[in-house]
Each structure stands twice: as structure tokens, then as C-alpha cells.
Length: 283
Ligand SMILES: [Zn+2]
Ligand SMILES: [Zn+2]
Image (cartoon, rainbow, N blue to C red; front, side):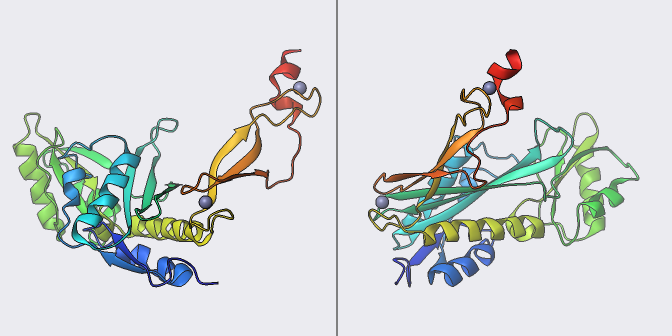
């Protein structure tokens, strides 16, 4: 059977070379061609250096960014991705991130979001007093020069990007410290995909995930992207049969026609451990 996206041109909203990550799975799994949208200023939607405030939550930003591709390309389908990195709430000192990829098919009315959480990142934010001798080692620890860095003032303003020599980073740190009222500067990892090989790898994994999902066609209407949309909790307790917080079943759905199918847990469990049961533990 021929997939609906075979020979489809799919726009990609990126100015950071993300087609390197997205194009291979879309070609291999769907026979689709990724086309980078020209004249695209995705930086109007916000950047990792904090210069521009992002409009709304990340998923919305990502969908809006994908739609920017329709302005400059004559295509029905478009993709964009957004990453969000930093220390996470539960484990404040462990950097981690989440990548979000939005796919929009405006002809079929499809909107599919895939996400990938990861601990694989060199994301760091480091603050240094002027002339700190540990600066060169810290810059190299971020993977520089293979990985990019941004040098900011201590209030996170005026980022200096695109540095390629260690000496230039060190003098940029000194300059930023001089221009900051407290005499300090901030060093952060450049998270733009083309300057961050680890992020590019995560984007590649997420692109495969999205392309695999699009491979699945809706059993009711044939639209691409049929797959997991929700999980229902309430698996009955093995002892008292009361519902627990464990997942009872998974729900697959179609974003075009709304068709849904319930699917049992992959591990085949029909009951939850009584250790997880509020009723049994409270007795
Ligand atoms: Zn459908
Ligand atoms: Zn129970």
C-alpha cells in the first residue's frame, strides 16, 4: 500500500540546520521530502539566550512556528521543533530537557505533537567573576569548540554568539563582566541545533518517533498519525478491586476524524499491586 505522504513535500521551519535530523526518517519511513522553508525568522518566536520572550507555552510556540513554513512554501504539511532545557524541578542540579516536535497537515486538519524527554544534554549556566582562572576549563567542559557557547552579562542580556576560539570566549567573558554592574559574566551552552551535536542527536531520535507515528494510518479514515493520545488510570487493586492510580488502559486516536481505540496495558497486567492501593494501605 502507498503511504499518503509518499512524494509529499513537507516544510520544515528551521534556521539551524534541523533538516539534518528530520529528513532521513521522513525519507526512509514515508518516502516524503523535507524542504526547509526559506526566509524564515524563527528567532521572532524567542531564542535560547533569552533575548526575546516566547509567546505562550512551548507546544503552542512550536505549532505557530510550523505554520510559519506555510508563508514561504507552497506545501500542505509542515514541521517545527522546540527545545526546553534547564535544571528540572525534582532534581535541581541535574540538567535535562524536553524536545517537542509539531507536525501540521492543513489539508487533512491534522495536528500531531510528539515529545521526547532527555537527560542527554550539555546544558549548563555558569556564572564567573571577572578573571576567574577556571573559565577556560569550564568552556572546554561544555564541549567547545565542537559545541557552541553564549557569553552574557550577569543579568542574562547582550549575548555574544558565534565565537570559535577559546581566547575570544575568555576575552568576551572579561568584556561582559566589565559591562555588568556586579563584575560577573554568564556562560551558557549554545542550544541551537547546528552548534550542539547532542541536541541534534536527540532531535534525530524525536524525528524517527514522529515519522513512525505518521506511518500509522487511522483504521476509520486512513489519515496518517494514528497513535497514543491518552492513558486512563484506575487499574483495579489485586486485593479489593478498588481503582488505583495505575494505568488501566491506553487510548489511541486520530487527530483528523476523532476515532479512538482502547488498548490494554503492554505488560498484560489486569490488576495493581495492593501496595499501591489507598484503600488497602489505609485499612
Ligand atoms: Zn481518522
Ligand atoms: Zn486494595
